[in-house]
Length: 153
Ligand code: HEM
Image (cartoon, rainbow, N blue to C red; front, side):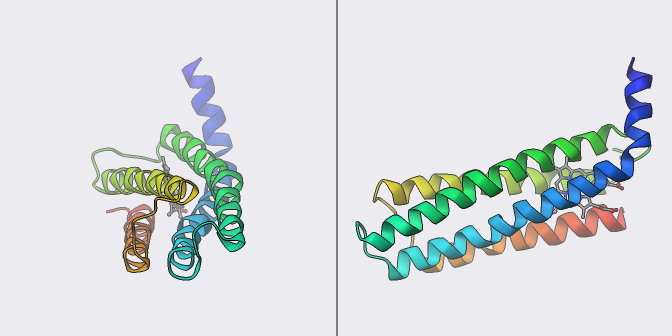
């Protein structure tokens, strides 16, 4: 049974990788844009105004319609790649760097989701500067992930 599954994973390796990359692009688009929305929301929008409601709608749609499904499909296709024979050698360093980075990226996703709730409840206490600084987290992780998965040291 397991042999049959790994044969199928090998046959569809390039399809899986293609879908993984498409999912990653979609997830990252949101990961980079949502903190920007939070910066404008914090610095230029009055709590309780019409614009506040508009920003909340944009943030909710971005998170639930784009980012959340994209995160799930990135994980699904990524894990299928992990189980594809001959792709990941856990004796090398790169899979560990990648694993640590994608776990941190996933933590960042949920951190953003929690900050969205702060806005909906009118209790955001972060400044625009703090959101700008947090925006560097996914940038750093993206470098670590792409270098590790492509160079494979
Ligand atoms: C969320 C969990 C993730 C898992 C389990 C995972 C796992 C994997 C695996 C096993 C591969 C195959 C490597 C190969 O074919 O040699 C791969 C490829 C790739 N991953 Fe991920 N990944 C994840 C998330 C991400 C994220 C967040 C990014 C980007 C920010 C990313 C970018 C890539 C790229 C660009 C490739 C293609 C590399 C190549 O063609 O050689 N992955 N991933």
